[in-house]
Image (cartoon, rainbow, N blue to C red):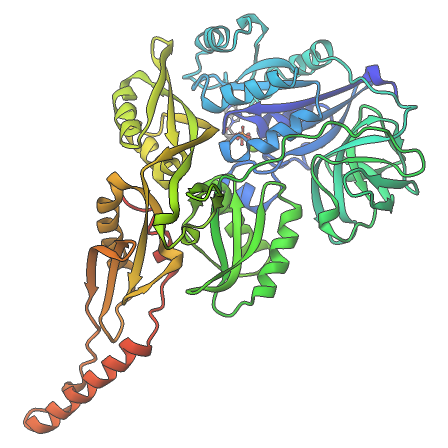
Amino acid sequence: MDLSKIRNFSIIAHVDHGKSTLADRILEFTGMVSRRELREQMLDTLDIERERGITIKLQAVKIKYKDYTLHLIDTPGHVDFSYEVSRALAACEGALLLVDATQGIQAQTVANFWKAVEQDLVIIPVINKIDLPSADPERVKRQIEEVLGIPGDEAILASAKEGIGIEEILKAIIERIPPPKGDPKAPLKALIFDSYYDPYRGAVAFVRIVDGEVRPGMKIRLFSTGKEFEVTEVGAQMPKMTKLEKLSAGEVGYIAASIKDVRDIRIGDTITDAKNPAKEPVPGFRPVKPMVFAGIYPSEGYTYEELRDALEKYAINDAAIVYEPETSPALGLGFRVGFLGLLHMEIVQERLEREYGVSIVTTAPSVVYRVRLKNGQVKEIKNPSELPENMGLVEAIEEPYVLVTIIVPKDFVGNVINLCQEKRGIQKRFLYLDPNTAMLEYEMPLSEIIMDFHDKIKGVSKGYASYDYEFIGYREEDLVKLTVFINNEPVDALSFIVHRDKAYRRARQIVEKLKEVVPRQLFEVKVQAGIGNRIIASERIPPLRANVTAKCYGGDVTRKKKLLEKQKEGKKRLKQFGKVELPQEAFLTVLKVD
Ligand code: GDP
Ligand code: MG
């Protein structure tokens, strides 16, 4: 194929600014789908995406327009899924940066803009939703100039909903975005930027062909492992999976090669020709580093093996997840799973249950702490229960810090500043993007963000504040381990690490919360929290009193006494042997405190 006739672009923006809707309109305008076939946000194919109205996974489609071939990649907007955006951008030469004409620039607009700049992409700003009465495209143009440094008149005015500006956008894609470079005659080099598991095709790799070409029947080799496979099918989503004769330099599409083991397809790896291999792989992407870990255990009625199978299958569709087996005295055999953030965790949990048919219990998420021991060793702690029992061995505990960027209307600035201070934030920058919109930057412990920052900041800003964050490094803090005891037994899955200044308040809140959510038993339940073995908060959940005496209509006092006697014994036994069944809610109480 003539490279000068190819254009590869991603659509990037803040959540809800209209990326998936614009993709719909482009597919419709170019005749790739008929009006009859079109569903809203049709590239959001997962059930969970359609229900929540958010994009989680990138989607690459091939579009024929005039005599051009366009590869469009729709991306998610939420901060947890920014790894999807980076990978999508690696397959492109340009990006459409959408900005909602009513909201203006938001936190992920800025974050995604910088991702595209880092990859040297041509950026086409598009001001979307101009059909809305509250649209203020002139204000957004000024913001684009001020904040992103792109001349405002380069922005295209559009309404993805009404189909305004679509032709102009396509024209800009062809005129402003350069065609891909690459040598169709050179040995095959294909960058894997996404993968999924298909019951018929096996593990399928989505690739950007950098050099050479690939056809069915060809023997391919994966650079990282050296494993070889025979290609069974190549093609592209148009937007349905469509077989093609070949994929060649500059193109985006999929390769299937009856790959059974999902772990053979690694995101960022290079596929080459086994007979005529390329010398160097394509530089991959920085591997993703999950920041938040939680335990996942099979619920009552499901086995460890079932959970393992589900996780393995799930992992091929989600390049960001990592997991390893773990044993908990309270919960048995399970996994410690790494996530990009809380939304990611919620989605994984829901998809495992709905799409992979296991029911699970998730423990409270924790960041990865770094513990420096006095003997010079450094340990990474993904589970607070791994903290050494003997704190005398510990030199210092470090926790991950992030730089948080917040964009908020000026009326809520005071509230946001108060919240950030409460969250141990250190202000780094405070400026106005325009007379009504402030941008703040804070350095903050990641643990404070995963606690409840999202709900809190939305709460104090009536939903108007948006934020994004990136990891900036580890810092030493005065941290202690809080252990929760239920009837004097430490519950590993409920222990967590907290700043010493907040330990008392948190301990109190947690035992109170647990008192609410742990169902009353036939025996008394003691709920306590302590630093080491020193209890600093305690609550009692009174027993359910099975009213045995009610049966002895009146009179017979000795019989009544006997029964009460018996009941007491029973209670003692239960206390001793009985195990309190904790509901899932209990494991998340650690997060739900004010
Ligand atoms: P994404 O998160 O960026 O992919 O955004 P979506 O495409 O899912 O759109 C988010 C919401 O904005 C949906 O309810 C869309 O119907 C709506 N929307 C998208 N584009 C427009 C537009 O141009 N005008 C109006 N009024 N609504 C739009
Ligand atoms: Mg979307």
